[in-house]
Image (cartoon, rainbow, N blue to C red):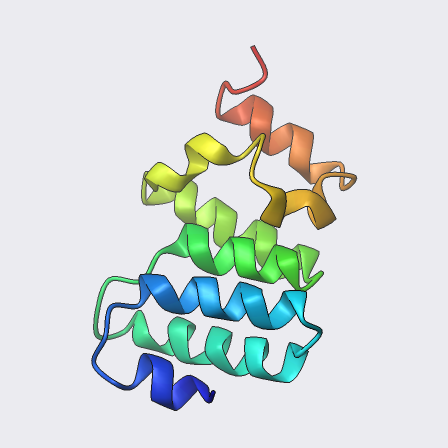
Length: 110
């Protein structure tokens, strides 16, 4: 399934994050990255979660972009941040020193 078909269909962007993560899980990085690009571009015309973009970057192993988008999620007060310590999609970035700093900054280390 192409990103254009999923995201460009006029549907809600949220479920596309799930499909992109499924693509990552089955090793189809090209499809996941295509969906990620479409979701990121969609932020110019509708609400698309910075948390979701950050988590997808984390799933893909893009630590720098993941933290950049998670910082944006903090600025936007994204509700998804409550899952920062437990969401498995963030597992690839947990060893990064920026991860505990972000957890601490949000007061989730208490």
